[in-house]
Each structure stands twice: as C-alpha cells, then as structure tokens.
Image (cartoon, rainbow, N blue to C red; front, side, top):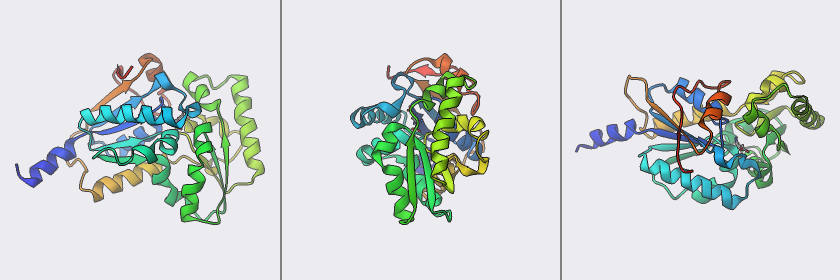
Length: 271
Ligand code: DGL
C-alpha cells in the first residue's frame, strides 16, 4: 500500500476522549463543532467517579485501562478531557502508547499563562490541587505568576446530580468563590471539566469574564497539533461517534444535556 493511502487510513481513525463522567463533554462538544468530520469515541468512567478523591495509583490504573481499550479501537489520538487524570496519570503513561495523547492542563498552560496577568486562581479537585501541576505548568511560561489553587470536593457530585437549585449546593459554590475573590485574581481557571456546568451559579456572584473554561484553548491546541502532524480527517462527511460508560448510561445521558445532546445510549464497558 502506498504511504499516502496508509496516511489516509490513519486520518480516518477515531479520536478517543475520556473523563470520569459528563464533564469532558464540555471539551468534546467544542471539538465536534470545530472538527465535525472527525470520528470520535467518548468514555465516561462513571463507576469510578469522582476521580478527584482517588490516589495517583488508582488514577493511573483507570487511565491505562481506558487507553488500552482505545488501542483496540485503533485511535489516532486520545484526549484526556479530565484535569485530575492529566495532573496525576499523564506523566506516568505518556510514553506507553504509539498514538498522540493530549492532556488538558499541560496543553493549555502556555496560552493561559501568557494572558498578561499576574494573579490567577484555580478551582480544581483535591487530587489536581495536591499534584501542584497547574502552578508548575503555568509558572513554566510566566515565572512571576502568583497562583492560588482551591479544591472544591463537592462540585463534581453537584454536577453529576444535576441538582443546581439545592440550597446547600449553592452555598458551597458561593463560599469557595468568596474565598477565591479575597485573593483578588485577574482570572480564575475552572480547572475541572465539570465546573463549567456551574458557570450559571458562579456568574451570579462574579463577572463572567473572570472565569476561564480551558475547553476552547484546549480544542484549538488539539486542532493545530492534528493539523501539524498531518492527522486531520480530510473526509467531507460528518464523523461517527460512539459513547461508552463504565456504569449508569441513563444518568450519563440525562446529566450531559447542558453541554451535549447524546443521541444513542452509551455502551457499558470495562465494568
Ligand atoms: N472532571 C474531572 C476533572 O477535570 C474529574 C472530576 C472528578 O471526577 O472528580 O478533574
């Protein structure tokens, strides 16, 4: 087979996404809009949710299981649409596969750090905050940046429950935001893919443009990299999509609605 035919076959291969649940759909939906012809797979690891309170060892194990599965699906790239997994698992598994792997934190840090800012806040899970990876990656590109990371352990369960009007939930969001605002940040990164689902609450107490949802920056990065690596799917047809979860496909479909309308019931795998 000629090299150009081989390339064409590879370009048609899917891009696999994963997160602990619906959160990564905030990245996935932007990707589908930016590159509608790409074939895509999405895996929500609902059985192990929340990732934010898991150990490094556990998170590496989940990531390996998912990437091993994606290897059997002949992916050309995997998008780690999960800050926690990018913070704790990426450094261990990054050289174990022969497809491209895009971790959200490391892929977005340069663009965020170069935004003419000197104080930045990060809301993230306990595991992401404990890793210190956000501060480390941002300071690589802007050494004088002051970074305050605050863990919000209840925010993922709030999003996965879909119960945004619960009084306790609203109070929790406000308390964390108040603490962050005392630091007087120029910007606040929503450093967990679930947190953009809470923007409608956060915006009640602070200006919308204070918050950075890294999803757009991330998708631009992936698009450029696929292009530069000659991996874009050049087909003119809409790409196919397949969704997988490790548990509760009904809940996944229901809670995903803010970001993405899942058409077919996801298949349960790796359970
Ligand atoms: N949404 C993931 C993240 O970006 C993980 C959230 C969780 O399951 O705790 O960190």
